[in-house]
Image (cartoon, rainbow, N blue to C red; front, side):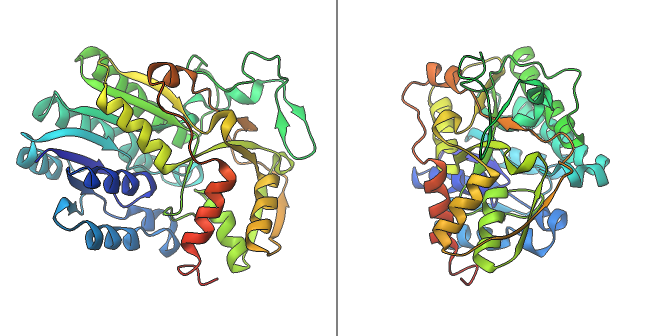
Length: 356
């Protein structure tokens, strides 16, 4: 049986990919040690999602409670399955700007050194496999904030005639700008994934995601804003907007659309460290104020929110992904679930868990 290795398998994208490939008949080897709970406390745990996968997928899912910084533990797993590994999907990460600033060594070792460990596993044990890395738009640092934004009633925008009005392309410089320590560690990982592809001619790819969302994310204040905001609305908890008048714009992509892009690449992979921006693009984007309006509409509750004039360090004023490069290479892929529908799914699928 062909094997798919997925790190962060109990997280949002990892669990979506786990279910998808198990449904196709692959044996999924999942790695997740629930460090999200260490990062964000009990609210951030993914234990519930791991239990759901183990219950629903049976023998098609094998879970390892392993840390991707542990080279020896990874070696044992890859040696066991190396003959059958067709695909590695690397989604495990420390995902928060603020947390990274508190523990930069831990952040870098997880995001950069952990990624290097996995690339070495591929090179040594299964070099014909495909390696998919879940990178981030934060590799561009605050460079997008230099664009000439126009203030509208509920959002910042670019003039329709601007070269980037359709979104940020992969050619935007990642150099000489403020990244946050999280952005820097993810950029280091992004570059090493490219390098293993180019130098060793391996089939590696970086997907630089916008806001990845879906109903199975353990959203917290420091990460997963759509889920967290909806949870606040559903549970009558307070929410804080940080800077930019709440008009900052994010493109939102559902986990299933992310995994569909992964699978398109897996079916027709390229060697040499390809890079794609991946997000909702112009088909699925929303500002904080617009998100609040939709949340109140969906939940029929008024969100209790406050405003802090200080934005988070390195945060984007406006970020929409230009996905034209990926769509050109894989024309059958497109956004299937836009932002408002994503929010409705999060609400419907979490009403019992969040005791609405």
